[in-house]
Every structure is written in structure tokens, then in C-alpha cells.
Image 1 (cartoon, one colour):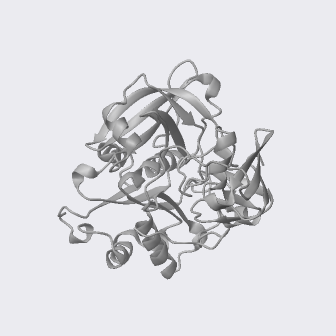
Image 2: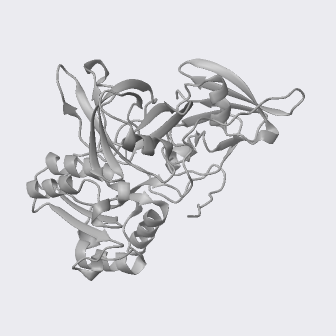
Image 3: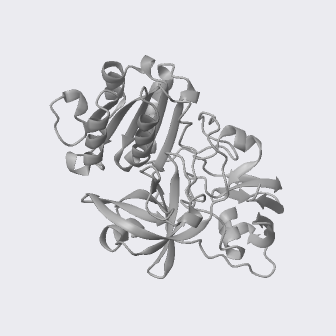
Length: 387
């Protein structure tokens, strides 16, 4: 899948988010795996226990995600996963949170999670992040539509559960596409949710490689099929808010069609679980500074401490890569410009940003960048992770 390229320090045409909670500095804490539940042959739900003293750190909004950090085959591996359940009390003030992990072809962490992970394991879990959410009070009584593919269902589960529980008049319609029935994650959970809210939850399963009774719901979602589904089953004029989660091609298709039928951009939220490139699961690449090399001088402000690193001009390394050489605790998760965990503000100097799927236009105007995608263009650069 090809990537869209955006001009330096600009963002794709996407809606400005309404405030649903301030971003805060991401921090890792070690949590214990409480449950590993099989969802499909290639997906598991992983539950964690959050001790009472960390409950505030892991308070989250439906639609947010956490990053997991482990060491496999002698290397640090990080992956981000959406939270799929509302926070739930356990005992003695402890709570639980859960993510769903689907096996990626060649994915080191996702394969390990399917075969080796079990209750009792301790994993570093980052505090919740992300803006793929909304104020529950704002959507009370609204008709909300979620369009998801594959593991894009994960944040939709949290959103649907929370929205339907928060208001007796909220309606949620889910259009969920997979290859076949055996690939549908949370199949029983969705059925249970439908039983609890039979008139307010509408489910449309689209299977691309399995014949369904309704021809409209059989086959890949292309523009023609999407427009027909919208007209016949969803009725966009009745919808107050849209949430899109899946691969780049599907999300872009949905945004283009919705824009063409005059759905306001501020009513559409989207999140990508992949941009088409293989996520950088392992740590930063090695860069050596040799005597006499021309370098960029990068100053990093993190947790109230300033650190400096020299980055060779001909290395073309990202600000994040350089920062990790002097501050291993620099926050990051996906390294693909999708999650926004590595967000920082440029105080002095300039950068070019290769990709941006996470920052809103107002953040860009205030000087925020994704350090995993930013490359210095000035001799001196100062970035602040604490602002």
C-alpha cells in the first residue's frame, strides 16, 4: 500500500479535534497480565491489572490506546494497541484494562503474544494516549456510526460500550468488514452487546471472502458498495458523529465519500492501525558521530532535564532516533507517524516532517511535531517534550 506524502511540517486535510482531555506525558509502568483470552485463531485479548496507586495514571477515555514494551530476542520491542473495554474495578482499589492483539505477518510481538504470553507475565505498559475519542455527554442522544476493518474494531468496542451505557437515547451503528466469519474479532461480545441494546445498536458485518445472504454485505468495500450501504442501511443525514478505524486505504475511501456527500469534516474522526509500512518494532538504528563530521546540534528537554546530542547531517536520522541515544526514556510507540506518542514542540530551529497521521492543524500551528518523522534542517534545534 503506498503512502501519501505531505509537505514538511504540514498535516493531511483532517478535522480539528474538539477538546476531550489534554494530552499528557506518556510514562511506562510495569503491569501484570491478568488474562489472555482467545478471540480468533489470530487474535487474543490481553488483560492487565492496574494497582490502586496507579489508577489515576491509567484513567482513560474510550478510543484511547496504550503502548506495550517488552524485550524479545535481545531487543526492545514496542507496539501500540487500542483499549477495548471500559475501566473495571478488580479488588482493593485495583482496576483492569484490556487490549486486543492480532497477529501481523512477520510481527515479532504479535506472534509472541499469540503463542507465549500468559497470565502472570509482567509487561511495561504506557499510560493511555490518543484523541480518537469524544465527550460522552456531548454525544448523549446522538446517532454515532463506526466503520472498522479487522483489528480496527478494538477502539470501537470501547466506544460502543461506553456510549450506549452513558445514555439511554444514544444509538450506535457499526459497519465492520473482515475476510470471513472466523476473522471477526469480538464476535460474541458484539452479539452480547446487541442483546443488551437491541434497538440502539445496529451491526452490519461485511465479509470480503465469504458469501452472505445479503449480496450488499458480501465482497470488498469499494466506493460503489460503500455509497450503497450508506444510502440503504445507514442514512448519513441521521448521523451526528463518525468514527473510522482501519488501514489507510479504507479510511481515506470513507473520508472521501463522506466529504462528497457533504458530511462536515468536524463530524469525522479517524485512526489508522497501519499506514502500509511495517511498523518499527525494534529500537533506534545505530548512528555514530565521527570526528570532523558536520552535525546538527539537538537539545532535548524531557522531564525537566536538558540533554544535547550531535546528529551527523549525512545520517539523515530522525529527531527521535537522535534523542534515544542520550535519553532512552524518550517517549515513542509506533515510529510511523500514527500514534502521536513522540509529540514534542520545536522551541528553536526547524525540521521537515515526513509523515503526520496524528497531529491536528492547531498543534502544528503551535510548533508541535512528531519527532519520529522529523529531521533537523537547522544547525541548532531545541525540542521540548514537557510543554
